[in-house]
Image (cartoon, rainbow, N blue to C red; front, side, top):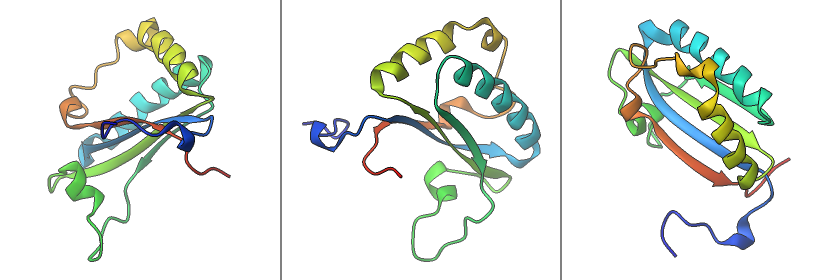
Length: 129
């Protein structure tokens, strides 16, 4: 089993795409506007939940901070985001629709944040409410 694979016995039904990315503080409003547009598209195509959160408490002496993990520079903050789907097959179906949706075709992130520095991964739910 590779590091990216999760044993099937741990997988609950819901599936989550998670994101962590540094965003220049000066661009947080522009990022929020972009995220609002994306949220509408993902939810319309069937995502169960869509959250984009901006950091406001990253100081820690005990653990590695999100700022460090995201490689945030002094003028950047961190966005932690996730999208919830019914299952992985639904995630794949919904993401295909989202990527083909013309409303996002003109959305450019290059002036808002550095897409290459974003961390992303798909996660099987281990514990839920």
